[in-house]
Image (cartoon, rainbow, N blue to C red; front, side, top):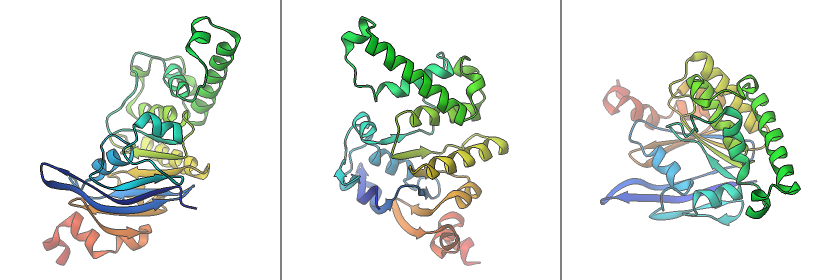
Length: 256
């Protein structure tokens, strides 16, 4: 069953093709990694998929619905969530409050009940806190629940950002370099976390420069170079592809 379908996506900036005619699909429980050298167009592709950029061509289909260029908050309501290269954490809020914030988008209550603190609003707040604490437990952050987020290590902040995205109960989760800046232990923790998320039935799209992590965890890999897809397949197949070797090493080095 295909959950997310990327069909011929492309975009130009000042007449330069940043991404051109990229297509692939993701199913529940899969980890699909998008890799390529710096400047290959990976984050630009993620920006189009997640509604940050409007594609110049192609479309994004989520669970059978054309969601091309739909705003990120509407995509989140439909089950697509994303983390970014640069941390988007509320540094002065507690860890718990950061995750509770992720639950608010799923709430269906009205502003008046919240302002008057009616029983329905209190129930929603209680449920959000319980859900947030459970997510923190799953991600190994429960002991830090009452700490200010800015006091956490970089690796813990990465996990916190993923926890907040998971609070939205995504069907598709886009992770943009979740292991960037992490040490070996933190990277291994991120590795296990991504595997656990995928095992729960979420389709995970991953951009990551740590090739060891990518090869360990990916179900499928899409390789970009200069904005175009040059290879696609399982990790073993992709790692042997001459176009992939050339993209990473340069054509002259790959030929030696």
